[in-house]
Length: 401
Image 1 (cartoon, rainbow, N blue to C red):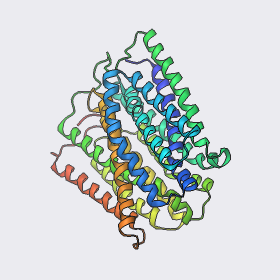
Image 2 (image 1 turned 60 degrees about the vertical axis):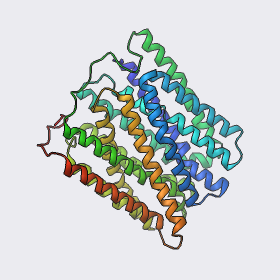
Image 3 (image 1 turned 180 degrees about the horizontal axis):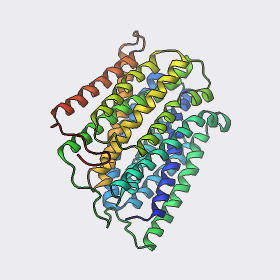
Image 4 (image 1 turned 180 degrees about the vertical axis):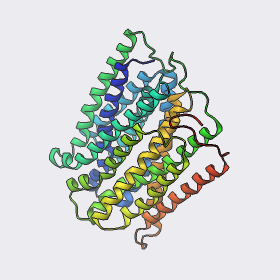
């Protein structure tokens, strides 16, 4: 298994990567609005294209990590992002060039997240998996929330080029740290290949555990349907609320901090494991708060809805990652599936929102209602899996059923 030094380095890579890609991708929509005049429909279409690219890229990235090695996958991912961000900063001028480079950056990113998830979980016991997945979630959520919260101010203070040179500097540092971690792993004669020397962390999951994995893999992309639709629509929400870019960063990132708080709670409390009522309640909150944020033009209501939304997103995401890492030994592959499901959600929500705005321009909040309807389809699927699954007494906290 990997040493504590390697695991600590993985968490450092994860936090830096989260800050860099959150700043770049979340504020790319503000950049597109300010630089090229993109409106809600154009930004939603851009978000849909981003998600569509992420699906095959994440599957490919996870399989590459599993077979070529985790450190090789990280080097490829960070290297691609360094090149694309450098080209975007120094050479790209047209909207088409910036969009092409942004999509290429997503390909690079897709080699990193499945790999980092697998590295954090590899070779751990049941208790170790609960601990490390908790640390992993808290780290990326905290740094991502910080990036979204401060990103508006950074963009206004440092200028639009900072959208490229700030993540570029961080990715360069991450690549250097990856080389060091790989060398340290080799010197310590620890496993540096994709398949570890440590034994499996859990027995093959029972049918009910597999059902929870399917439910989590279904719910998480729908959660990202909501997230990416909201992120792409936030410039429009900020405009309706008469917020500056800095104020939008402060006020529209609160759901990130609420998700972080949920991760902290779930990290120390395992009572939600393999319990359907918690997943169902979170999904219902997701559906309601998503619509409220986009439809109600009141800052106080938007803030309160974001707090509830963040809690729901926390449990849904945590479920997907925990069950993915708890369900078998091919953690790189499972990480890729987890990220591809996210990409599918990132595509579907903005695509439906953009299409509804195009087909029903006369209907107020057409995009919000169309995506809300899509989220209800996910709710039906979640309940359907539960009804088809043999019922059993819930397991003790943190144990398999």
